Amino acid sequence: MSHRPELKLLYKMAKLLVISSVLFVAFQATNLHASNSQQTFSQNATTEIACVNFVGIAPGTNVEGLGTIHPALNIQTEGTTGNAVAIRKGHSEAGPADAYRSNEIYNNGISEMGGFAVIMGEEPDPITGKMENHKYQFLINNGYVADYFTIRMLDFGDLNPSGATEHSVTLVAYDKEGMEVDRDPLKPLEFTSDGAKKPTTGSAGNLQITGDATKAKEGQPGNYVFKISGSNIVRFELQFSNNLDDEGSSDPKFGLTDLCFRPILETRTGLSCVDFSVLKEGQSVEGFRTLHPNINIQTPGTAGEAVAIKDNGEEKWSAYVSKGIVNNGIGDKGGFAEIMKRDKDTGKIPNHNYHFQIRKGFVAEEFSIQMLDFGDWNPSDAPEHRATKHYVTLVAYDSRGMEIDRDLLNPLKFTSEKKEHPRSGSAGDLRITGDASTANPGQPGKYTFSVSGSDIVRLELQFSNNLDDAGSSDPNFALTNLCH
Image (cartoon, rainbow, N blue to C red; front, side, top):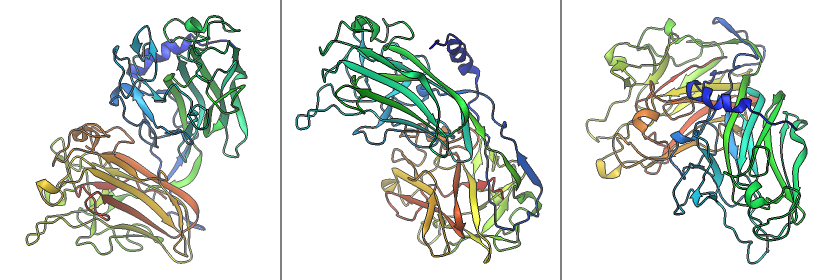
């Protein structure tokens, strides 16, 4: 196969590239005709190639999960005994985020965009005699497809602890039906070697050079760029094998970098977004027919009521303040929130409890909603009892009360320090990543939940934290971009 000098141009463009996400939010009920203005989403709504910047993630931080690195992409390492973590070029002393060593420097050769790896040991399991396997998958979020994906593998082939003599790696793309769309290379990257732990002979030459991140030429095992193209791709797999293990990576110590892909919003016609701006600030959004005849926004069991809010609105209808502006980032169509206040007697802030009920006789197939300004405030009950683990997820139920789907399969989850305005944790500085006006899409401060399935009649936005199984650790946030 031919290799890609144009990728170097992408790296330079990546600095200027805004990794954008066209936020889609869809609710579609059987025989339902929307009463609000119609929007038609084009399949070419997102056309820019997004190159992921791992440098913004602290080394050793997990990069798996939808929205962690990009709202349309989920890195998974299902079946491994480790987790994929962010890596960057390091020093001569090994650390917990060091994938490999080249010229006595750990992660040497990783691009200025950083990279990621599963940190594995060099020796086989003493009981099974096998190495831990790498199993990388890259999943595209519901509502999107991809037509382009590329990733660079560094420092592969110079370490061979199992003694394999035949080695193979390939990137394979699949559509929604599980059918193969494309693979790179068409014939896997294959090479032979001697059976030494550090092989020096074989079809790829001296792998201490051709398998090394900084010595290998592009196209050799130590510096190989995989590239995929095709239509309606929803899953990519980096597949490994060797003559001793059909699913095994013969070299467990390598890194991945220069991940670029193009997310495309799937074609959706006849969809409409709820326009909360038609209501006055502070007016209740709850009840059927308030905003739509077949959906009821509910806040059962809470001390408040969900009301319409507006960007730069009145202080008394402030769900949050960002950059000195009330409800900053809500947009022209507005949004809604419960305006929560601390109880004068108990000193506690009530919990949020959002439900979305579908009118009897109708069902939903898809539902999505955006949460803004979550995570930058962490009041809890008292300074000595502030939450450090935070969870939110959207769950869909059918008419029998059975769970149909939940966003992310696992909740949006992140950790923070035990402070009222946390600055460190798995989501970074939450004064930035938890703020409506500074967070990137997919971070807690600007997160879109999406579920799909048949026979959905009820949805719940569920919160919890390490101090309260049903509590929202940040009570001051807003919801917007609810479409049907």
